[in-house]
Amino acid sequence: MLKRINSFYVIIAVLFVGLLAINNRYFKGSSSFLGVTYSKVYNIKIEKPAIVQNTYVVPGQTVEPGDLLVELESPSLNLEIQRLKQQIAIYKSQKQEQQKLLESELQLLESKKRIIQSEIDNEVKIIERRISLNRSLTDSIIQNRNRVLQQDSLSTLQLEINSIRQKGMLELEAVDIQITDLNQDHTFDQSQLQAQIDLAQQELEWKIEEDKQLNKYATFKGVIENVCVKPNEQVQEFTSLISINPVHPSSVVGYLVGKKERDKRLGQRVIVRSLEHSEIETTGSIIGFGSVVLLPNVLQQSTTIQTFGLEVFIEIPEENELPVGEKIIVK
Image 1 (cartoon, rainbow, N blue to C red):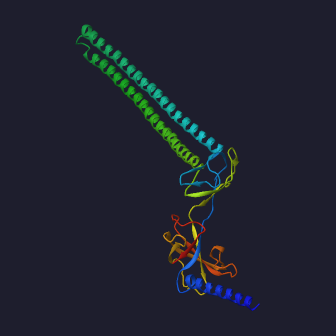
Image 2 (cartoon, rainbow, N blue to C red):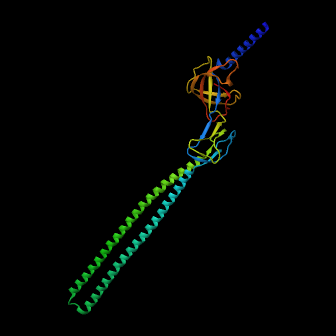
Image 3 (tube, rainbow, N blue to C red):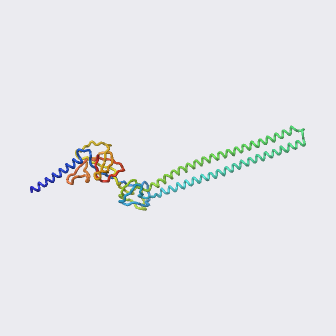
């Protein structure tokens, strides 16, 4: 019986010495402390209603950045794209029709100008022939007796010619004004249509880009945790499609145990190193402190005595080589 009691005390003593050794190694006399790496599960969601065309991954599959995960199609978005394309085509057709109409109207006005000019020339020629005829008759019959009468008659006819030409010039100017107004109206109408085309084209480009963004691609290296949809399924906006676990951790939680120095401060730069693979390390910064909690099982040094520590939250770069869920030491 005495021997059993002695063995019991020996075991207790060994455990006590072991705890002291562990405490001295990791938690005393040093500013270092232990922690665990964690990764946040990323849920990929859809921004608007769509139909799943196909899925290209399965749970447990490792994906690389750029890998296509889910192919999606939005009927409403496709309808909007087709509507905009048709609208742009209509606007362009209207522009062409307006241009043809302008050319036709300009041809009519130019023809009108030629007719006016022809009428002027014809009337002037008729009067000029009358002048020539009167001059010839006067010279042969009346000769010098009625020179004054001849001059009066010629002056009247010349005034008539001038009047015809002035009237014709006014008519031509009126047609020119019509041409100018027509060109100005056409330019304005064309600019309005072009503005509508540009606006619809810009909206179309946005919709096409939005359609391209429907498909979901991996943005980091990770392992597929779950595929929540299947082909031909119609999904609503904000529906989770796929969840991915990063291969490398996105955060670190350290633990200050016992009387370990607690002069850590927010923003302090630290080195995070793997305990299993000491060559793997990264830098980080302290972003917050939690409460005193029970250490995770992976950090518990004994199954009989539970250890508590103050949580220290550490931010690390997304690009790191640390494994997830592994013990690390923070210095």
